[in-house]
Length: 407
Image (tube, rainbow, N blue to C red; front, side, top):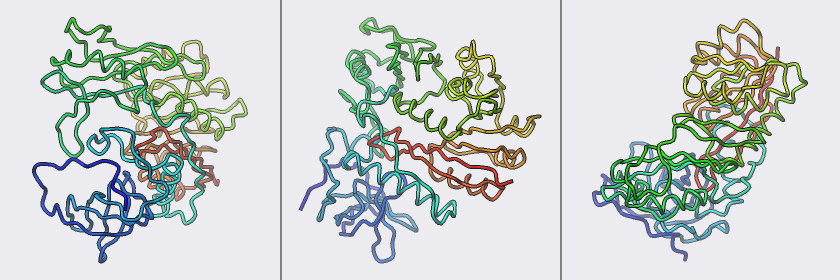
């Protein structure tokens, strides 16, 4: 018998139904990092399990149609089980898969994408390629959001609670962020949240909010910083989104470029363009790019990032308002929506314009599956889906889908 990777923290106040223990076999991976099993017709979602294992679980919460549980003892271990290196694993809510070997994490993440496309998208045989591995499964994050307790100690919230776990280092963070974390500890009691961002390829940083404590040895309160992708500098303001894994962000651009396969004369619409990462990097390969973004801060960054790119045009507004009114039929449309997926009016506009290609970048397999079904019912064919592991050790998975018009 094998014990679980770490002893789990018990909440002091037990939810209704918590505490029952039983043994079951885990059969598949579910979304959000839980392994799935069945007991007497009940669906059981087990945290810290691996499909194929026989485990003892303890119920954490009962729901009408399923149970939430947690592995407390491994009876028959998966060959892919490993010892989690982080001392906070199981307490901190940031990671869900440290107990799984990295190669198998990629296999499980692909299986989740396939499952969502089958169940939600109704694609009987989804064309999903093997997940693209991260160059490093550790120390890849360029952005940390810390919570701060009354003593000024930085950390993360304890899994399932709002309590802060002060930490000395996070194994997902770039070493510079961990060094900065050490210098900030005990000096930040004046605020309750802190964002630390680091330019891996530039050495620039942004720490928000500004800290007045004279014990802080670094400049804080910056309004923006710069990062470099594939040789191109990008300015990123404090409120603007930017991918947290710099190396895999470059890989993501390469996947998109490969699917676009530009001939040099295309009109490309970059919807949900953010600070212009895709628009700026793809513009030299196409005839013209129209970048659409609703955040005024991101558009300002994007226009600055696109200086000297003559074939790039910015439109500030909601994609669902801008896309239906485009006067020209684009050759290709790139959509990179938030986790909730595309607005229905965006999907309808794509069916109306009927571009030759749609490249859909998604951070949520469920909403991706839903939207791909809508697009395929509207006249497109799904060619391929490439998972890209932007977030090793967690359940999150980025995917890039290629669709082509059938008419």
